[in-house]
Image 1 (cartoon, one colour):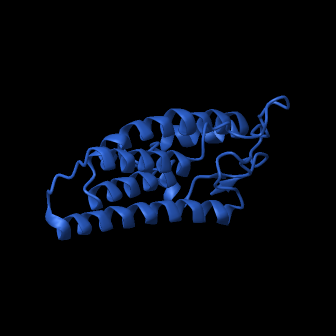
Image 2 (cartoon, helix red, strand yellow):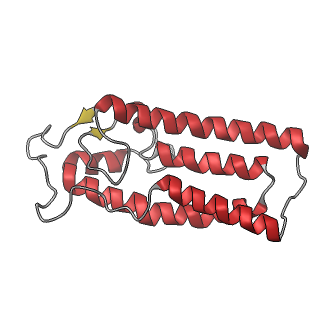
Length: 178
C-alpha cells in the first residue's frame, strides 16, 4: 500500500517548513558503490588479490546468481516506487510511503540488491579487495543514507512510517513471522 503524506488522520506532512523536503543523504548509493569498485580496481592493480577459489566456472555461476538476485531486488523496489508515483532517488522528496510488494519483507530492497551486486562482482572478479571494501561501503550507505532516510521519512509520514519500521526489518533479516 502506498500512502501519501495526507493519507491518514494526523499523518499529514510533518517535515518542518524550515527543513528541505529531502533526506539529506551524503551521496547517491550508486556513487558509494562505484567508489568501492574504483578503489578495489586500483588496489588490484597494485596488489592483486585473487584467491583462485571455485575456479572460473564456479565463480561465474555464484557471481551470476548473486548479481541476478541483487538486480531482481533492486528492480522490484524501484518498480514499486514508480507504481506508487514516488521517486526512488533518495535526494528527492518522497511523495508516498510504500509498504507493499517487496517492501512487506524489507525496507531497503534497492540497497540490499546493490550489496548483492557488489558481492557478485567481488566473487566474479575474484577480488578480495572488493570483498573487504563492501563492509566500509555498507557502513557509509547505512549511516550516510539509510539512517538519514529513516529520520526524514519518520518526520514526513509520522506514525504510519514508524509502524512500518516496527513491523518490517530494515534489510530483510531477521525474518519475522506474521
